[in-house]
Image: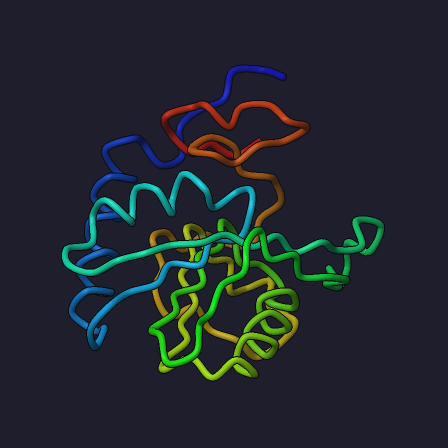
Length: 171
């Protein structure tokens, strides 16, 4: 793979994480529970966790999808890494890249069954031009166009590589 150019620098990321954290704190009523979707959102969750003042906790889930189904990205299974009680909690589902919205829509629908006080979607990178379902990210660090390419860096990997880059680039 050739040299990866930064699309969003480490400084850009830090500014946007701080802005998203402020917005979440301003909008939340009481405690905040960040529910990160593994594995791409792990670094973003860590930075948000440290940037939000007050009562904040977190957990992770994994959404297993049919990797051969790239058109609709159908979720097959939600795997709770540990038991998480979200009843009456302000839950912020943190996702790395929101594209079609299919997985996020499925996940939010399943989480609503557990009666959270509020349920919001937080995207590191939002690609609304690629939506195939009617869903909107409530908090967005970066909005990107629908052009081709995968994102790497800041926890985002391709083929298990480049997640350690301090910036986000597109390959």
